[in-house]
Amino acid sequence: MMDNSGVKQIYTEHYSRTENLKDNFRLRETLRFAQHLVSKPPQRMLDVGCGDGFFTSVLGKVLQAKKIYGIDISAKAVNEAKSHGVEATVLDTDEKDLPFDAESFDFIFCGNLIELVFDPDRLLSELHRVLAKNGQLVISFPNLASWASRIAVLLGFQPYYDIVSRNYDVGKLFLLPSKYPQVSKGFVRLYTLRAFKQLVNLYGFKIIQLRGARENTVPAIMSFADCILSKIPAFAFQIICLLEKK
Image (cartoon, rainbow, N blue to C red):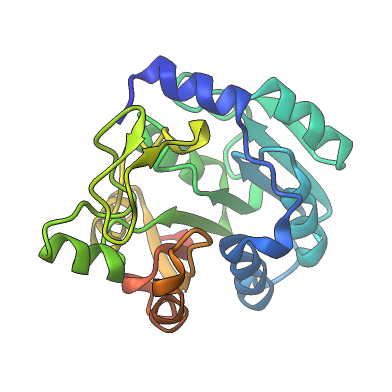
């Protein structure tokens, strides 16, 4: 984990760039997931942590959303998102509430953000507030208890998303110690599926559907097993959840 200012600096400068959509298992799976499960075209869609807005725009078109909004901590990201047709706003969800009225959106996407914020309680409370009564929320996050991490811990290695150094990735099964890419340093809170279910339940959500997604960066020796086991959400490296208000 990192100090507050360090994480915020990382994601202000190294915001999510999603134009390489075809190479990202999680985003591709999110598109398929949302396309098949979202009940009707949203009138207003919000992406919390929209990054450059490219994926936001693609998702909005797939869902046939009438208006597309985005939030990101990075001013550079917001400017790029606007160029993709997203009505984007600079906002730090740890510091400020979402700048929207209650029940403003009938679809919200929050992709791999909840593990980066220092106040997930505030984030979930705000997502609940701005989601319409019959709206749908899709949240994705890296799974602390993926199949590979479970095996790794049994053998005395670190879970794959766990960070013990600010500069180096160490203690991982099948991975040699290496220098961390700057953008990979920012995990603040990691979740198992069980912990995530209990937390969102406390903030007024029920999980409607789950899906697992593969991890792009697994070593080649693990890729076949990951392809098979990622179909079981509790074992997948990445978890995608469809939620509604209780």
